[in-house]
Image (cartoon, rainbow, N blue to C red):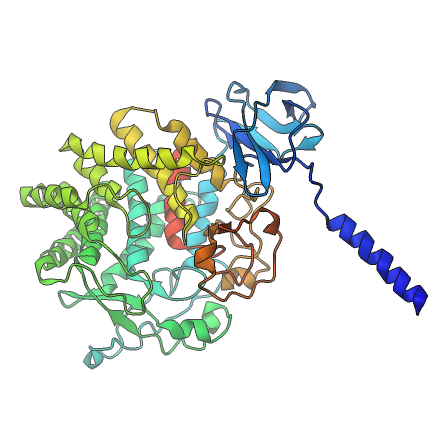
Length: 548
């Protein structure tokens, strides 16, 4: 017995020693994908103890040659228990190649410098939408599903079954939401319209740009959601979806019982009009499909005409995606209608609503004022100032953190951070002013690994990425989820409001009392991918790509 106890004691000591953190260990956090040749190139280095070696090296992965070296300046930041944090800058290195950073024997993940270093990211992000497809839409990683959407529309029982097939599942579950579908569809269309050269890629060689092929999935479903004038279905399926266990969508126990829930508000009307009006121009110009173009524009004008009969904000049927403001969305609808019709009434509406929207200092599915201001600024340049006000706020927030994130942590942090980059891209195109360019780059790099956890939040992008998404289809494919983008770190105060039973604590060392991230399949706050975040990411990384 004593011998057994002694052996167990030594085993405990051994494993405890192996798992203990070396207080002098250096952690290097950088973008794990890489940089364009002329990018600002930085990394963050942190440790519990002062770094003794005050020099960093950039070495080639091809021949181990030192291509760049510089001084590590004094620590100006702290990060929780890590009292010594340093920023290193190697922007002068612009020679294409594959590299790593070395500091006192510690080595970073590899990264590349190339004009095409980001091309593969947008291709991957687009695949996520195929995984999310619902109905007879040729989905990826699962079979055709939910062919009986919707079993009924409460309040319209006399209609019986209403065809609400198609569209995308919103996230890791199988509910479909109008708000997020409208946002994602608009972002796909807007991305193409913003830079047709970069977004004209056709990886399946069917003569249709992939991004428009995907947008059509959202378009068709949104058209089905609008029936009999002002009626609008804003959600298919209720919260029972979360109560029947994990399953593939084609094996959904509730496939014959998925109601369509109605709601209406100026916010929903604005997004519907914006999507349809923009799509009407694209389908006319790109495909010469005048019939479909007219159908889209008619639907946009018709629903927009009911705006004064609708409440300001729709009431979310189950509480998810409850909006807070309508001004930016109705302004966006009005300006897209003006761009499609030339009717000055729409332009006057857009200016009035756009001024009421003001700067929102944020980005989410419900905070898209900068899109409206971007469009309106073509006719009223003063609207650029609203976007600049947002960027000034983001810049201030970024300057206070060693990791330079420009948005506060929230539920959906990665989308908010990418939204900072997106708004910078809009501003740069409008003005030719690149004074916020480093802000944009820091947000991109945060997503790709320049963050406390040293993780790229996009599946299979970089060396370290999420492997346990809160996503049912991924779960049944051993974590495989091309293009999946984790929601990212969230405030501990938010996480405390939910009882989540987690199993994976790989990144706990870098969590703080205020901010946490978990690569855990049960964590629907920090590790669930959504069509909203992916559509923002498509815009940002598509604009960074070298595609022509």
